[in-house]
Amino acid sequence: MTAYLLRRLAQMVPLVLLVATLVFSLIHLTPGDPVEMMLGENAQRGDVERLRAELGLDRPLGEQFLAYLSGLLRADLGRSLHFQRPVTTLLLEHYPATLELAFASMLVALAIALPLGILAAYHRGGPVDHLSRFFALLGVSMPNFWLGPVLILLFSIQIGLFPVSGRSGLASLVLPAITLGTALAGLLTRMVRSSLAEELHKDYLVTARAKGVRRRTVLLRHALKNALVPVVTVVGLQFGALLTGAIITETIFSWPGLGRLIIQGIRLRDYPLVQGGVLVIAVTYVVLNLVTDLVYAWLDPRIRYE
Image (cartoon, rainbow, N blue to C red; front, top):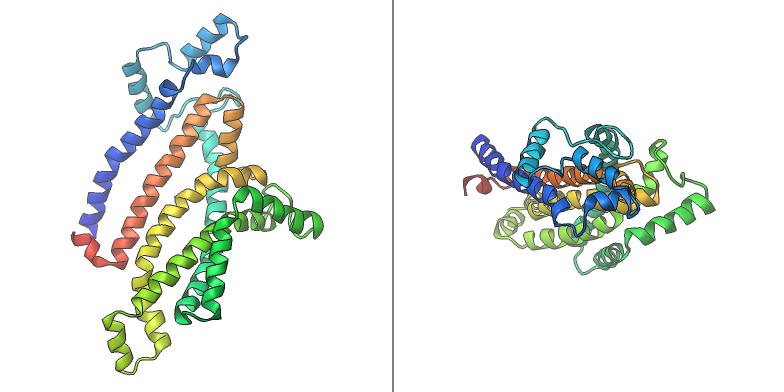
């Protein structure tokens, strides 16, 4: 397992470098002058030149890139133009809220998908199976920007059960987590059901049943672990998607997370802040893929020796 981990870490280094290069290239691939876009068309020439020098955009491209990489090694992502604070500090202040929302949404999704998917596979073709398919279709079909306001109207304004917005405790986390977790729950329910139903027809499970092992024991102790291998892959990838999906949800619920901060940076034309936020989300994707591969290798030891 150690050799596999070291090999995957070695593969991650050039990937992180590629991600950093792509994020750095955003300012040069974007049409127009980013400094003029930040300051507006009526900005004075002296202000434009001063901001360009402040961002280091007046230097040669290669020198800019080396300075950018040097800053990343020191965890220096520049200084926010609007907040006048280090971007790294702002991201560290808002990132825990995004992780909190993502973890809560994943818990909501797993709490729904695992039991419903297992029951659907156990009673394949029955009412529970049809109900799980209907729920999966319903969950995938409801976008966050529609479900979030509906939940606010129903549970916050009409019933008054949960806060409308903000991050003021566990109650304020419920509606955003349900908004983000519902679509993922629909996807995972279908994955668990199909993977487990296919596993139940494998020869080793038929042999176990022939030896008198109870069906429930075969299902939960033997089949479920192997059936979760493809599900873990989807969970890892979708957790990264929760971070980007949280941008819309955080805006709807005024959740003080990384996504809402990036939206503020875009609206305020705060280029260093937007660049740093995008980089953090991209690197998070890479790290989550590594963790997913490690869990995958733990569930299926054959992966380590390929």
